[in-house]
Length: 225
Image 1: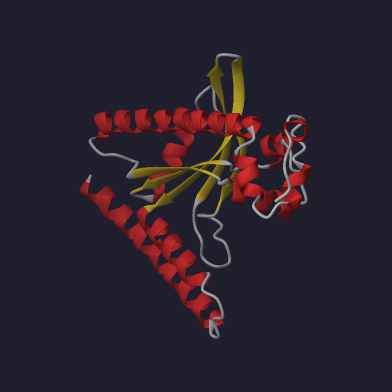
Image 2: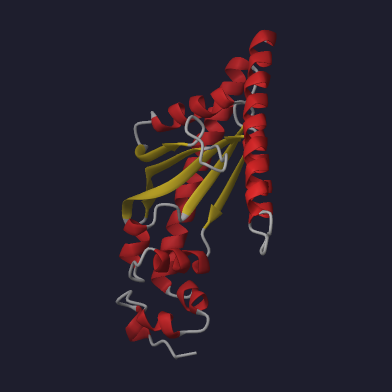
């Protein structure tokens, strides 16, 4: 492994990372990178708090929760480097902040499809939340059957040095959509599948069935209410 000097790291160029056998280890120990990851953690906490407040308020008003669970994650250094390389972006702080929008991620699991849209609207209507991008894979599923509502939002965090706006990816799914996506990921990435086309077709059929069950359960809930 090449020795990375402090002089190389401070300009955020990280050029020697490209020649290292374990570049993710070098990146993870760059002070500026560690500070940026801390800021993304703060952004996740901000969004997480907003979601919990909405969930509690909804529970108080309607005696049920529109959010079943919330999962958060920060991309690993290895994943960040892989995505920068895939997009032919330079390895620098500017690329991380402006070239990648999903370093900080939150997955919101909802009981019913209409909860997804209600939660998304309540979140993005807040005056300190700006919607950067929105992709609706529920109304327009991917070819493999994947369904989810993806939002890229930008929110302010308040540091000792001042206010800073951070991007966070928010994925909203039903319990059934999350179940399907988890199994699809585990099954699809098995190597050397001789019957991959057949499996892809079956997974798509399962996704359609699950979507139908989601809507039926939602209609049952409305009848009960």
